[in-house]
Image (cartoon, rainbow, N blue to C red; front, top):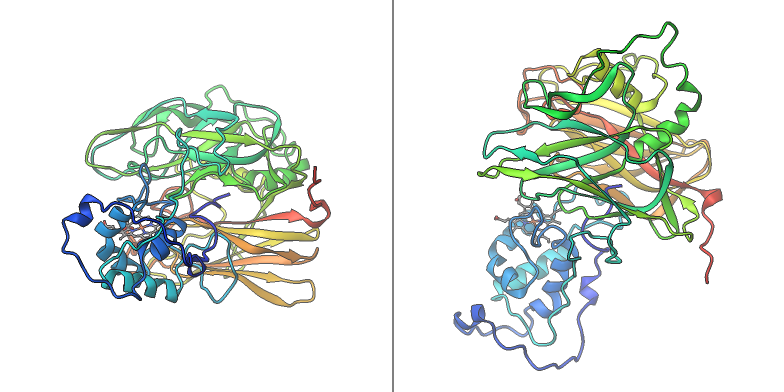
Length: 500
Ligand code: HEC
């Protein structure tokens, strides 16, 4: 679902417009004030090379009202930031992208090739010429700020019911608020988008469908242990009476079904991510019939002044052309030592989360995994998902917190052959991309997908807040998480779209 970072795959070296002689644009104020440089004729120019390259790889984030500190939509912008751009691209710190290029090709890959980096360096060192010819067309963004590529406004918008207050300074944790799901049927969507309401103060938002566990209700309480008391938190239901028989038995019948639906999520806002749009002809199912709430996982950052933020979810309904359901399979946890995982409870990851919430009274600890030991540099968690029907794997997603180190997705075919689909090196909590395969990979029934995730709770991990502590599993950023899934379609459903 986190699929639209940047634009399409890059073909910038082919974008040289040969022989085009347009009148030169009138010189801008910024250029006027500089000494008139003499450019080497071979120096790449903004109009021919650099502009398009920035649009395709940078302006998803580097534009007004986005998380990046400056816009890179114009020649003046790019020129002003040229030295910093050179430094960041040479260091490969920008654009952020973490897939090992040795494995897999991804349609949302925003990384720069060595050649493209060299082009930027030559442009900067050569005096940043604007060049003759037409300026490249900057991408357009909708006025209301939604980013469906068609420019359409959403068909349905659900706003969080209250404005969240962000303090001027200090750190606030990752926390969860809950609202009732505003519909009780299955809806089929082509796209969803989560907008933060305040880009500067929002670190990320992940929204998912949720079932309020028995004994709990949405009410008033601390947003996190010791946090401000607000509405829309999960609290114990004072009127709840524990049933005599197994409380989970009624869920278990269609738990598999629900598990798939649950891990599909509703949508997420992370830096640079716009609308999550299914590939053409596909739709996602949002199971209002199987869930009753939305969990909003929120993480805010102080900006130096008090801020308010009111996120919203936009939904674009699927058209009739969409015949294929895009599905999600979460890869469930087992550990490297094999023995820690207790029998999976009936309702998939959310049932477990709920069990955790219930068992730990608000601390939200996942009771099913052993904690990461103190000072452990290579704690491994392996998740496996079984492919039950011939499927096309489209996209891969990982989520961990500050100890997340690296992730390797391995597809094992029924004949035992193995293929590495993706290796995320140097995972960073700041950037949680999905990796969309350039070509879907056919996984026959009987295949498995495994993800091997390593966590670094040692001092060597610069971001580790507390190497001396055991790390539990929860949604709080001081704990860690193992949330990995794949998006796929069923081969039997993947019919061509009717043409007329
Ligand atoms: C997914 C979002 C995203 C993309 C794509 C991205 N950036 Fe950034 N960029 C950021 C954010 C956020 C920051 C500020 C925090 C940081 O430095 O990590 C930043 C910082 C920078 C800085 C440092 C600014 C300063 O204050 O010194 C430069 C330069 C930069 N980006 C250039 C680029 C270039 C060039 C590209 C494309 C080739 C690019 N970025 C792509 C999000 C992005």
